[in-house]
Image (cartoon, rainbow, N blue to C red):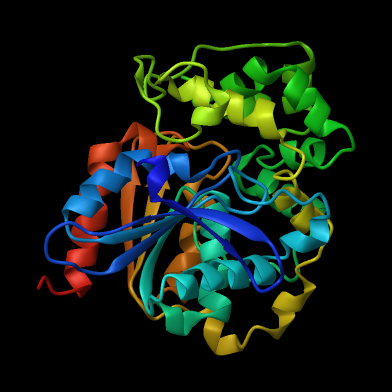
Length: 345
C-alpha cells in the first residue's frame, strides 16, 4: 500500500473519510472492502493487500471514524453504527461499486454486521475475524453482558470497556503509550485473560506502566514507509513506531467512542432493523481465534450457527490479531472461501 493510493470523501453527514482504493491486477474479480478494529487503521490489512490485488480483486480499505486520516469527532453520538454504516456506503458510492465482499476484524466485524442489517443489497458475502456476526445491538446492557459472560466462561472479558469510557482514559493511555501497546499486542495472548478482560485490570496495568514482550508479527525490521511521511523524519519505519506515532499525532480520544456508543446505548435505532435482516443467507466466513481470551469463539459461534445459514468456520491457533499473526493461512482461507461462491473469469 502506498500513500498515493489513498483518497478522501466527505460523507452525506459531512465527515471526511480517508481510504485506500487499490485496483486489481490482471483479470478483475470482485471488490473487497476491508474494515479494521481498535486501536487500528487501514494499516491493519497491510498483509492482505498485495495478495488479493494480485489475485484480481479491487480493494477498498478505509480508516474508520476516529482513526488515521479520517475525521475524529469527540461526540459519541456521531458513532452510531447505523450512521457509520451509511458512511461506508458513501465510500462505495464514491467508488461507483455495487455489490462487494466485506471483511471485518474486531470492531470492523461489528460494523460489517450493521452493514448486513441496513444495506444487505450492497454485499455479496461477509467475513468476520476474531469478533463474529452480531444480529443487533439495540438491547445491549453492559452489566448484564459482563455477568452472563463471566457465568459462561468464568471471567469477565469486556471489563476494559469501563475504563475506556471513563473521562480522562485517553490521557492515561497517551501518558503510558508503550505500556498500552504491549497490553494490546502481547506476545502471550493469555495476558488478556488476566490483565485486560476483568474490570480494573487494564487501567491498573497502564498506571503501573507495566510492559510485556511484543509479538514477532509486529515486525522489528525496517521497511519503506508508505503511510504517513509527514510524521516521520526517516524513510524507514517499523510497525510499532507506526502505531505509536499515529496516537502521538492524533490522540486516541475520538476512537474510544466506538466503546462509548455501546455503553451509552445509542444503538436504539437498531430496533428498527427488519427481522428478515437479522439472518444472513449469503455466504459468511468466521475466523475463530482459539487464543483470543476476550473475543472468545464460544461467545459467537452458537448465535452464528443459528442466524447465518451459509456459514463457514475456520479456526486459528492465534490470539486476536489473526490477520497479522497467521497471514498466509488467513489469505488462503479467504481466497478458498471466495472461490467457493464466485466464478473466476
